[in-house]
Image 1 (tube, protein in one colour):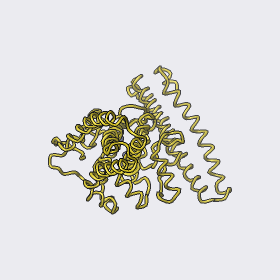
Image 2 (cartoon, rainbow, N blue to C red):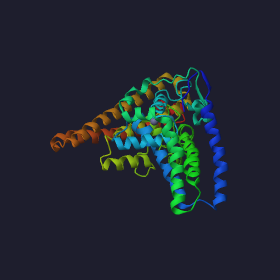
Image 3 (cartoon, protein in one colour):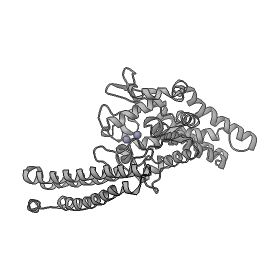
Image 4 (tube, rainbow, N blue to C red):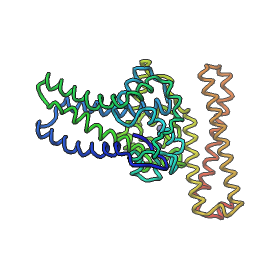
Length: 391
Ligand SMILES: [Zn+2]
Ligand SMILES: [Zn+2]
């Protein structure tokens, strides 16, 4: 399902598929339910399996593995994600990644971000999929690297047959086998649940990442774009709800960075690394994350102060605050540099004598950060211009 730029026309295939499948599911799920006196545990298990497999095919495969190269994976993992990604029917790996990389590069741009949240919730959710470029030319120049992966090329060639096999033939085959061997359920039970209902729910759960994750939640890491962190959305999106973190540090294989964050995509990737199926899992250093979080808080407080008191009008106060902010930024940078160097020394198992000066430096820097942070916070909380002049 292709992205869109300035001159678009209605994409009738996508429009018909995306509107007819919810209608068909609303009719056929209750119809079969009534006809067969409910669905069996096996049929519901197939539904659950297809939900997770297609969902993580997009989040772990299309998104973190291919679009962001946040880790490497062996051929079995890549084939698995390519198959279930095709079943999810969110376009091929190449086309999906091209749109997604543009989303990150030009986030919120009205023309260049394919699913810009600035064009409204509906557009970001699925409006953009219902249209396609007038000339049918999708720009794939930003995904040339992916063509080196034969699994990606193979999936691109066989996308349509894979889509039909995985969405219709396989569920129908499983349903038929189950009906034949267990002698219960309908031949169409698995097709309706794991095929049709899953198709609709998986689409909208994944669409939430582009829509709701840019509208609802908080912004602990940056306020430069509309991305949000939202725990509730993480539950539906296999961990992708920590979207503000992801937009700030897109190469990290994790989206939820704390142990208590609900991020099954991260857990699966980590678990696969224990058996050697995935490797080179990229992680942003803790000090960099901390720095980003603190600076973001400071930026918000500073902007609020400027708005409250119209500080830029008073040049002497403005310069004073900007200087204090600059000094603090510099101390934070020095701290990050020292932390990085110290952890490198630890990794290289350097002697305590070599590490000692850095440990001392880090202690001093941390103290200085606390003092400067306290001072800045006092300034940013002021509601009186005279008090600012006194600082
Ligand atoms: Zn986003
Ligand atoms: Zn992303």
